Amino acid sequence: QKEVEQNSGPLSVPEGAIASLNCTYSDRGSQSFFWYRQYSGKSPELIMSIYSNGDKEDGRFTAQLNKASQYVSLLIRDSQPSDSATYLCAVKRNSGGSNYKLTFGKGTLLTVNP
Amino acid sequence: GAVVSQHPSRVICKSGTSVKIECRSLDFQATTMFWYRQFPKQSLMLMATSNEGSKATYEQGVEKDKFLINHASLTLSTLTVTSAHPEDSSFYICSAIGHFSGSARNEQFFGPGTRLTVL
Image (tube, rainbow over all chains, first blue to last red; front, side):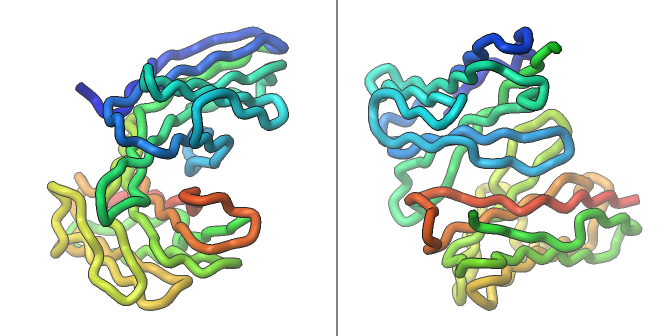
């Protein structure tokens, strides 16, 4: 079983719609969860971080975490063409002395159509 | 926010040569830096964790003698790809963690990446 799983997509939504990106993880000891956006040929950019169960909203973005189900999601409201990118889910492993290590999913390619 | 720079952004070299990539935290002190590699259409793969003043910790399967990491100061880490070969061609990205106002716990800030092409 892969440690962090994401649907590779592509996920295609029309402009103005809500885009829903999902991620599951296998390590129940995971403590921190992150969503990064990566444009083609560029490095990842942090969008959201979430540490406790529930929802966390920041502008058009909402992260949702359910530790019991080992599930984290990202909702993008009022999607814009500029949101078209690969979205990476990252989980901080509970790995003793290396507490800052992140494990990344393969990413979901999102395309927002004008 | 925290800014991490990398240099060079792109490098083309001949097989057998060595290439050094620099990663700098510009407005904060990075106690820990990470080096990742990303092949086309693949996710980021952690290569090593670098702590200032100590030896880097390499991930399983990463050759420490081939990928030399030096974290000599709180703002600079370098990755040297020794005797590079075409299969080393990839996108190398560093990230950093440090104490910085506005930075929440555990957040990594990524550099812009270095695209290495070995002919």
